[in-house]
Image 1 (spheres, rainbow, N blue to C red):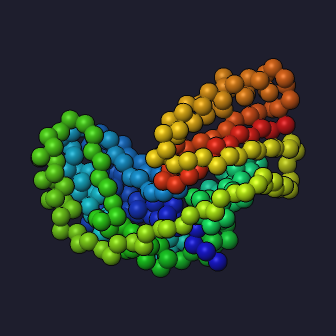
Image 2: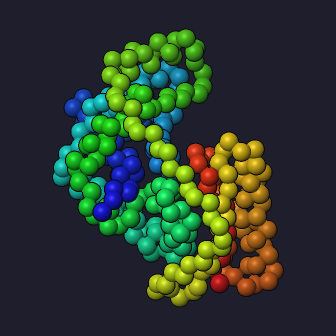
Image 3: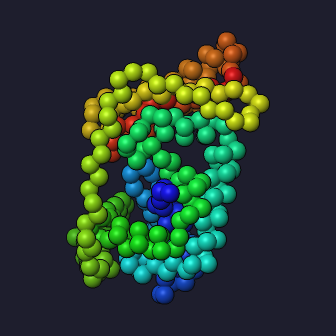
Length: 270
């Protein structure tokens, strides 16, 4: 068994409290001070963000510094949250033919690279993740030398640097996580796959390998993705759903901010 989905599951656990701020206090403190917060996990990183009035910046820095080093991962709480994530997977992927197809596309397109696996994780892996897996992962990756702080808004740069040092300066650096040096081998021919499952309507998907953000073409690909496949006014949707009426729905996807080469894809429900 692998450990796919651990980054996303730990994202959930980061809101479960520390000795200083108990379960639920992170969100409560932010909302009571007029702010809002959220988090997301991508294929390359996990991001935690909050929006505050500038005079409340210390609250955000205090909370983030505290949970970077003092997170409590209660075994019972972990098992409950693992079940939440498994249900999330059932609803968003396993009960959605299009999402399942996108997942299978990435698994077929990437053989060695971690993009092969879904962010939420494979169900078998999720079922076998333990509290210790999460804790060890947290200790290995949630360290100052593996993090970036981005602040945007009304502030004095010199003052903010001092505040960051105040809250994060005492947190010791950890051992640098191993650098990933996996290069996906070049695909030498067309790949096709068939995915059979209980569904009333067939779905089809086409995917193409694309460069990463360092390539100048990614800007054009981002625009092209919006024109061709973003929403019901897109070219593909209007052509095959409205005009030709050969599909019930259509769309596509392209992520222009990935660290490594990605996919540009289109799908349709027929």
